[in-house]
Image 1: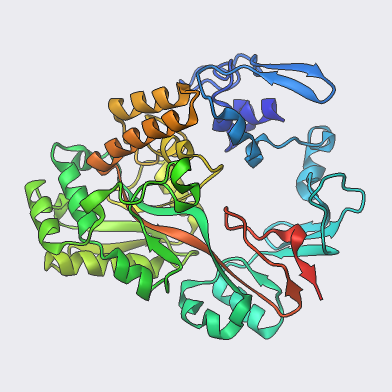
Image 2: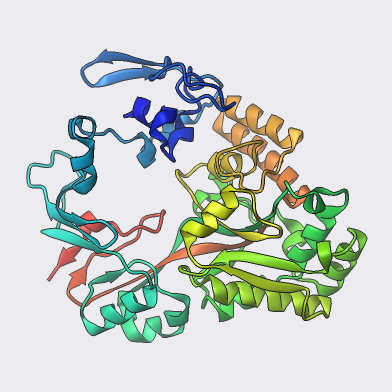
Length: 424
């Protein structure tokens, strides 16, 4: 499964997770050269259910990353009859897949012979796809749906009165930021960090999280997430005054940095999910009010998430754009390296800084967790001083469920713990 994921010819979006493994450059050359192997030389089978992994760089917390789905095993059927597997996948949890209609729904039923400790407490789950989560919420209230795993912003003010104790609002490992296209000279010019910091100071995070999100978001004061805890690297206030709303300071910084590129910024976002229009409009209103200029900032909606992502990948952004990050695994490394390290997998703005890269390398090589975390926080201060991305808010998981369910909760990734839900 790992060799399949790493191989360039299979074009897997998760391939970069195997980039730490020795020999990755052979099945997955990054420089456009021809693939010269199908397997990772760093993997050695040592028994029927065991293999060893040799890394190409020091990464002391690598074992902690292995809970991420990119590293999950795959059944023989995946390789033997791939087309059939795509039509009816085989998972490896407490359920089996009963039926599957791509883009519509997947019906799971309890697997009685499941050998793991997390056995299903219910007979099965039908996962339904909605293109608008407002419709899903309406279905929940009408009794046509048991669980909504993302309460839309427009419904948050009513959720408590609609659902009472059946409304869940818990911290999750998610942060929303505004990223910048550093491949555009205007955003990489000397002094442009002052413009970015000025924009950060023009955003009234307290007001937006309260009025738009009904406190299901918390103003960000660093670039990680409170779910990491202090020991895990969350540092409340690391952003300092750069994340404090101050219109006078915002104006001054933007002026000192040479003004807004082109006189106006357009915040690009996908309009199909996540209530992004509401908060982008609110962020622009806040910036416009702070700068006394009602044309300083406008929203730039893109129809679908897929189209939005393909424009980002094609480096077509000309101004700030929505960037959300949900942790793959609960490590400070995961909030920093994939997003800000030179040419990293999710460094969509193509920011690059030698000091940051050096500190990340040193942190990864550190075997003492406390020392590693301290190094990562030093690296995070480089992100702050350059305002590589503007941190907006930490996101809670918000969900609602029907009267026939009990024992419903969200995990730190904001996903319902389906196998523990009880029915009736």
